[in-house]
Length: 113
Length: 115
Image (tube, rainbow over all chains, first blue to last red; front, side, top):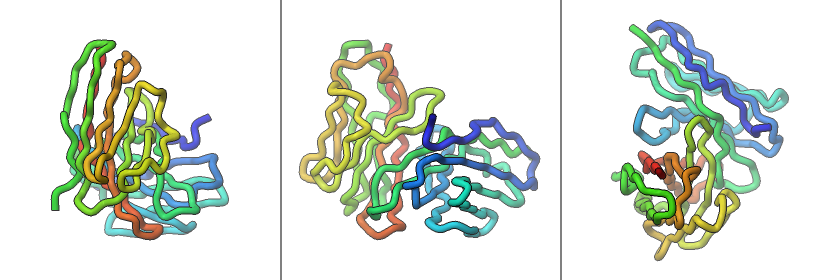
């Protein structure tokens, strides 16, 4: 069983839609949760970072963490064609302030005009 | 400020040959990570340097892979001899040592194809 499960999609939505992306995880040691965005032929770029249960909002993006259910989500409001990319959830164990990330497979998102 | 750079961007080699990938982290970043993504799979951790020391190499698949970071600056990842299953995209990331919000910045990756 993978430590982090993420539906690879692909997901196609019209411009302006609300997008919901999700990951589940099995390792209780994960304490830090991230969402990365990756455009084609580029490296992953950090989008959101959370380390507690609850919601964190940044512009059109909201990250949600539910540690009791081992479930994280990323919501994109008013989606734009420029949001078309692969979205990767990533997690890190606690205990140190740095260290290896464990990724989900990534969800391919296309926002069409 | 320059980001993480990787060289080459793409490499095509035959099975049994040797390939060396290079990563230049962001200046001043002590932490350097190597990750790999094989087709259809998730990005997987290979190893982590703190300056020139290997902090964690638990993700290295076997002894055909050798990573170095001389002087705590750039890093190389050598695959010798390469096998078909080594094909994939190799990412390098770097970060500063700074509390829980330590952010890993990724390079564009090296796409390795082993024929």
